[in-house]
Length: 323
Image (cartoon, rainbow, N blue to C red):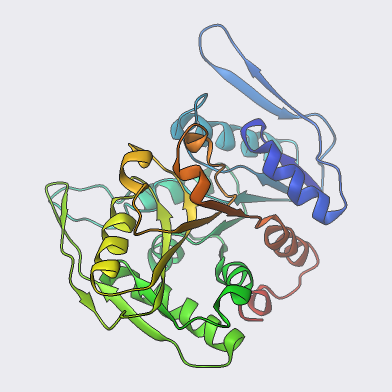
């Protein structure tokens, strides 16, 4: 079993490798004067089962497209070097939100990403909390595993909610299934029923409207559940609507913290007391912001390590999802 982590995901890769009690395998990423680059493994991978860890988000150094290209080139090099199998471990999968046509002649980018990854020779993909699980699974012709952060979130929240009266909230209608799954997970942990509510949301021409809440949040501790936070507008609107409707406190869970735009301006609202994300994306955009004080980052490297171990040992991933 060989585990590589491309340079921009090395910190997360080291956390995963530590859980597996393995060193990261050495590789080279070389830049050329004209802007081109190359990547290659620096040890023999012939007939080896290889895992490549690489999260696909933009940062100060590389765009999403740069990172995607590096992953494609590196996995192609592994297959050319006669690797037995290559599993791409992508904690955050880019372009996953564009999974259907919403306007005439729209691209379905999720499907195109799947074609690119398959064409590079990748045998399996492992990611976490994609935006639309059905679209994700249908886009790939190779095994595509979607890990879920709900148990990590639930374990973190359990000590705080034993004396609270919580309610689980989806910030829009499309996320109800995700919120419902988290609700059922919390019910198992707490041993009592929890209410599920959602807020209306309409998007037209880039403008988001709607503040009505379907359900009662009066005197409740509201837990907003979403797959990601980008500009933060949806979370801020939902938190404000909850407080106006009589909620006691509002906490937000979002697996992936992108924090684009003006997070300090949008998310520094008294209505939102805490934002909890995972380390699939490091919160580098919040380094010099006030909302960093509200932020908690949970480590999901052990979950990825366990999934990789089970794949390597031909174990059950289904048990990992539901245990």
